Amino acid sequence: MNAVIVSLQLMVRPLLGALRDLSPILIVIVVFQTLVLQQPIPNLGGMIIGFLCVLLGLALFVQGLESALFPIGENLAHAFANKGSVFWLLLFAFLLGFGTTVAEPALIAIAGKAADIAAAANLIESDQLARESYADGLRLSVALSVGLAILIGVLRILRGWSLPWLIVSGYLLIEIMTPFAPEEIIGIAYDAGGVTTSTITVPLVAALGIGLASSIEGRNPVLDGFGLIALASLLPMVFVMIYGLLVLA
Amino acid sequence: MTALLLEIFDTFRNTLDDVAPIIGTLFFFQYVVLKKPLANLEKILVSLLMVVVGLTLFLVGLQEAIFPLGDAMARQLTDPAFLYPAGQTPTYLWDDYLWVYAFGFAIGFATTIAEPALIAVALKAEEISGGAIAAFGLRMAVAAGVAIGVSLGCFRIVSGTTLWTYIVVAYVVVLLQTMRAPKMIIPLAFDSGGVTTSTVTVPLLAALGLGLASTIPGRSPVIDGFGLIAFASVFPIMTVLAYAQFSAWQIRRQSR
Image (cartoon, rainbow over all chains, first blue to last red):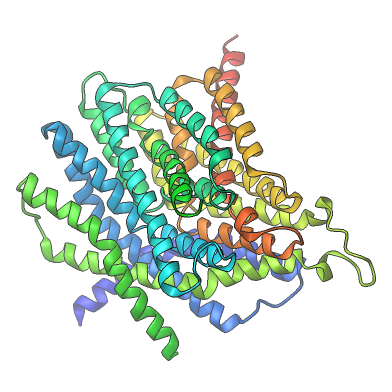
């Protein structure tokens, strides 16, 4: 019984944190509904239950990440930066990008939404199976590209490549590809870049980059430690467009 | 209620599959490659269970509240009955949608200020730059960028102009700024583009975009509905670079 009370007390701080994170959004929604639209919120009961689920879910999620995944991830990053071989480091970088992205809730949500819309527009079959395989395909292409991006980013830190050049050539590639990709995939592709890098990925990847840059001689944590997230936002655009070219065209 | 429980159970099983790869990766490297057993395994297993349960509740709540709410608000704000007084013929011109842009601006700003990943990165940046990059200033710059990006993205959906043009122009501006901005800020500026769009912001923006695109005549949700997140990722790069350029200019002016 005591253990339950202790764990409940532990939950107060993350719950307040989640409430703080969600409150500006609640304020905007309430202000617009009551002052601008002057309408009651539709299906208020369901909305409140849903919002409580989101709040509790976010709190549990963040708390679980902080007390389990972050310490392990940071320890691993430092251990590799200090002594690990380049092969294992690169494999770890790839799997870290891939693993965090496949599990990303925002990506799961967006891929499902994208599949519903593609089905509604008759681009894919509208049965459950076809929609699920389309959504899974999108998620896999994004996860593969993020894994590859983190790998390239880690190589950049090891070798000291210039980030602006990598980024600029990446965006040039995207802008050359865009006119050839199917029109229906472009918006999703551009969005995929932003979707991939959220609450799970960012701190893990930032810890990896800064840890590496501060343990390698001649690297500046500010100049070399950041930049992994930028690459992880760029490459998914390329891969989703390729996926669109393969599946929809 | 039963339907909700069934949905939670279903989502829980899917979530388990989704979290497995990252847990597998971390444990593989810990035990097989580095060969260092974890100190308090029991606490870590409990925390991992919290991650899975949390993710499940979050996803269910998203389906129940955030997506329908975003959809409903976009629908109401773009409803001809709200936009035009009774008896007036709807014209669907871009300047009839000013409230939509205001809503996009407010929701973009609100979600970004509250973004935990951004807070973490901003504090880290302040720490390792020795205070040269202020955490609060960085967060405000990013939030302003997201707000501008989202309202411009809404304007794009309403006016039906192509996403490509905006993105190309935006990146040309970013490119020009990159050549002039203080070198130290560049990696961080590019990173903040990805940091901004989080677990809460993304579904809400997607719902807003899709809601807008499906109410305005002549817009296709497939082509016009997505793309808001792309706007919310590009503009923070611009505002963070601008913030750094402004600070550098101020310092130059003061030292003169």
